[in-house]
Image (cartoon, rainbow, N blue to C red):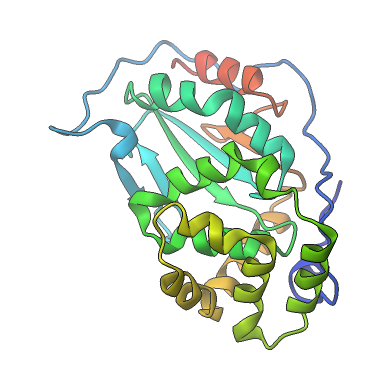
Length: 247
């Protein structure tokens, strides 16, 4: 499904909370081919899953060996059920086997396809670089519970979208239960509200998503291994592509 980002991100008079999103092509073709890469030792006293680096443009974050020969990039939405399924099926293996080897790094690019993606992304980044990937994983691991809102919550969320911009995302987070979710994971409520009132942070999420759309990314999750698109949105497709690249 093609995503109309300007409608979703800027002209939201109502809140589209439906979670349907078209999956990627289901082809089994591996993304790339290469000789097996050698394991790379992490820095002393650390695991590669504890190493984070900014992307060259400073906008993104990479987990794992920043010089890994196999670079996995995911365009994902934090409100996308296909992305949640991918993470639930594969994140433990990706982190514990492939990233841990030093052969593979992961860059996650949050692609806002629904208004709720903006506060979710801002809050995931709010706790700092070291906490970002862990919070993304928590969102996906608890996806069903996080998206089981009542009609009353939906109504409150719609009201939130009519508030002044500086209040909008904090009220949306409250209505959808995100404030309580992140509080339970150690992010103080006052810090959350400060982050959500930071309009440039919200605008940056929207602008990045427009950029991704302009590049032709039109569904989530969309994965690339060393610049080659992975055909298929299931963990088996991603793992096959990693192995074909030498992981």
